[in-house]
Length: 108
Image (cartoon, rainbow, N blue to C red; front, top):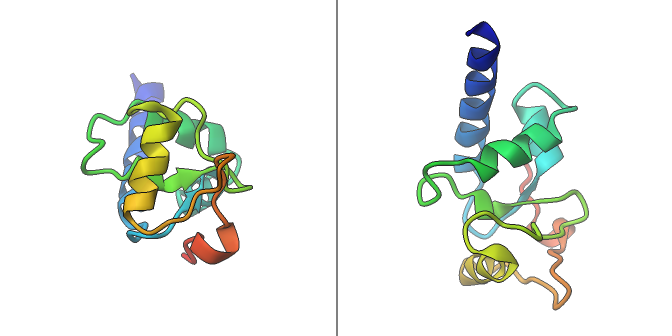
């Protein structure tokens, strides 16, 4: 079906972009959507990462919301898992689940 191919292609673009986020940096859903050529698709980026079949290959833990807030329902172990994965890469996460985007944001 043509409509599904469109989404599959978008998801593949999202995965390729997220793979480029360096260790120790984060990007926002909106930033990934813009880089994928669809600046209004931040929710679709979130969904693509939620259904990512290669969490070890596509570092979806490096994607946060525009304020730097971690995903409350991180698909691969919850908020604490995302926080731990980022901390292991040197990204500081506040006690209330935020990353300083000025300090740790990816400048793509």
